[in-house]
Image 1 (tube, helix red, strand yellow):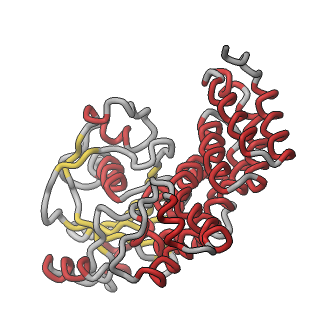
Image 2 (tube, helix red, strand yellow):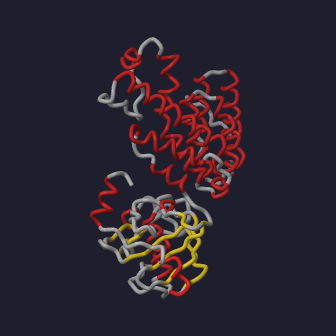
Length: 363
């Protein structure tokens, strides 16, 4: 006979009791009880229970902490205070990244570069544990679980990083980005958390249109990719009558701004046609698959040069991070006489061949 469903706060009390008793079986039972509570009820109590659960993560075993972290992330998405939960989540993310990196290093040291690292979605078999040797429990176990739980910490971290207040107060952002970049060749795609960490808020942007010699002082926030920036720029500059061309549809601009995205019907999202080729003032290309953080700071402000698109193609107009609204506003229009000092430093756009060579070299 099934046990009666626990109220939300009693279920969290059970988590605390399980930790105090140091019994993983009780911790797992408490999670099952929490998971059985209707989403609407959990969401209604998310503001009270999410900080409590987040504060307990560091007292849990590695695997259980990551599982509970995903639940905390969901509670944040349902209206819990991201700022109260973020320190615990982001600390767990950093520890998981560091452990995963050390796991990968030890694995290469033990098995060489030709032996693939284990699938991070699969638990270590008894045979693999035996192969890792008698020091599995003391040396390998915690590092292996850093490897196994990294994707869960990524999901939880993206949930709290959707809050601009969390991003503004994040002191170790560059360190976390570096850790993700170091582990990615071994681990695989970590784009979601990377893009969340690279988000810019209230960032000044100087856009220089090579053809018209006009410039636009703008400010951008929450834009997670350069396709999204492309759409918003075309909406503001072409749709606003500042530059000639075919503006994206209002629906496309809205989807790259703050319109609700139907995650169950992504195929129905609008498409947009590439309007610009992005470049640095140096003439180097800025690929649309990268992020606005890739736009260089020159003389104290990010500067983006617009050229006609070399290869026009359609792309899906959407936000890479659906919970983060994108915002781009124009603050001033600069005429050619005002932009002349900037264009004096702008180089010709490099050739497609040279841009492709740099891209192949990882630029």
